[in-house]
Image (cartoon, rainbow, N blue to C red):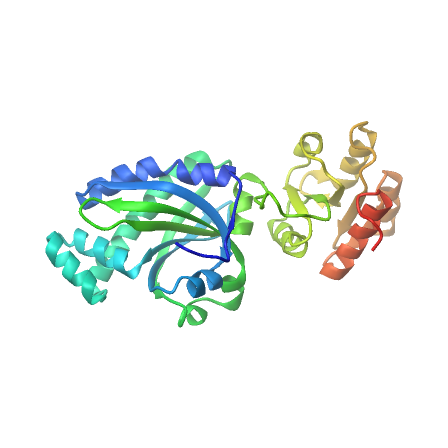
Length: 335
């Protein structure tokens, strides 16, 4: 796939984990198709589905897979129309010459489309079996549908939010013995991909204003905060306060954003622990809550919090507060 809008990513746990599923996929697909099937030269890139369809002037068949259990979102398995026709007709047990003739016509007829959908369902099951063993939290992947997509119909198939959300795209060279090389493509939204291992996947040369650690046990609030901040800051997340001190030692964190009310945990007590630790006492802390009381604010400041912000916060208000304290802590220069 040639795509000038994509950006190469450094190696990540997500990339390593997805690539680690390849041996299982290759073995099972070889059995399924009765053809030698291999995947090589993996590369993880960042783009949007909108850019992907516009920059790659081709027709695709995309399998939409729902991510369930403790993760939520979607993953897409993408093949060019040519590859979908090839795979579908292999499963229909056509001979190689007939498959090539069908590919030359460029038509994914009903029987072939059904066969390709079954192939996508099988690959979905392979990924599900592999990833549920490798991810830290319960995971399930379920095929929803398959759909043809290109730059003309992309805005009909997907909403603007889905089309323009940054996603991580893993591509690999796909070889089916007896046919031209193709590409095996997996795509997942960047937010969901980073949630798998609570990691930040960024360009090595990208410049950030600072590094933020957000502590919150609400998945919805974590995603909202990520969307508000990720363009300007490197953002780490912790959904369990017990991980926070180790993260502060592992990463250079410039500011911590803490939710007061977390299930079974007290954000103000966490704030106090951070401030008592010699390694982290100088890091500014902004406390937040959707239903603060005057006592909350007073107790947070007494515990060492630098500031307080009420949810839901706007991007402008949150960034203004963060920048103020990064400037005061000599992380940012006055603009």
